[in-house]
Image (tube, rainbow, N blue to C red):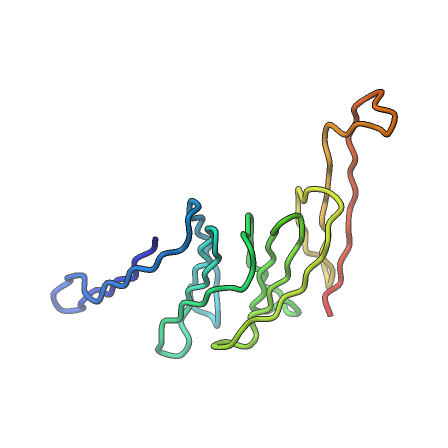
Length: 152
């Protein structure tokens, strides 16, 4: 649960408290910057984005299943973009249309995502699988690969 509360500028008292149920899992808070102002991505069983649009405080439920990890990207070609991992997929969430449903791209991954790097106009995802049994079941080893993605 998250509670948004206003502070009265004259008395300093907390007013206008608004609780919001975020989901059944523990909440992770990710700080972002949306339109040059602080914003928060709250991850639980349902992901919520809290930001300011004009003079209005917005709370938007993102239409995705459970998101385990997320980070904001701030580059010339990735303005207002969140990269998130959900169910072994990298999700690119573009926040260009505020006040409406957001656009995302789903990228299937072969293994578990371990690292994410942004360089120039590309995204590199380091994936790995540990304790992998070969087809004959003789030995255990690990697999790793780098997936490159260029958003359109």
